[in-house]
Image 1 (cartoon, rainbow, N blue to C red):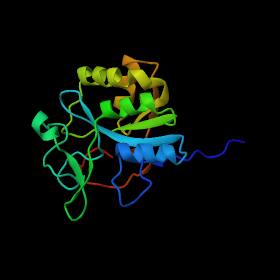
Image 2: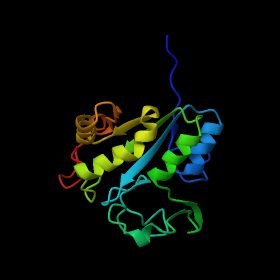
Image 3: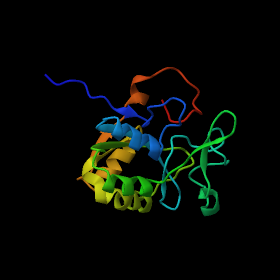
Image 4: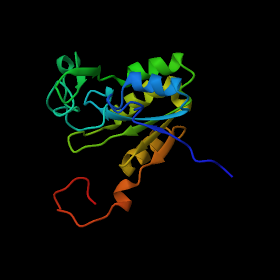
Length: 183
């Protein structure tokens, strides 16, 4: 009989610290978590951030869509607390891969690929994503609520470990037609 797997969701051991940070990932690995989950969001140039939301407004020191954030907006991008104080930098997927290459304690990292109406992810962006994770690909599993993301990644590279987050399929209730994603 297999035991349940404990996954460090959002790499967040400390509730006073934001989810999806490099510090959180390193802390989780140091605490013995073998499986860690973080969210990633794309930028239109194919860069990726450890970030959950579509918009930066409520939880960072910047405003607007993560997808449309320009190069100057990337500089000095921080998660903030309720007092609007900088708490932790928002990190890139490239920075995370660099840490994983050096830190073998991170045995499996689940990257939850976020999709929003503002993020028109193309094959060029998917291919850049695959290139970024390639050095540590055997230790990564990609998940998403957007089933088409999982399918397209599989079509581009069938060796990637994939998972599907079925939350939109089990949380049905009547909603407005204008809501996204369609339920």
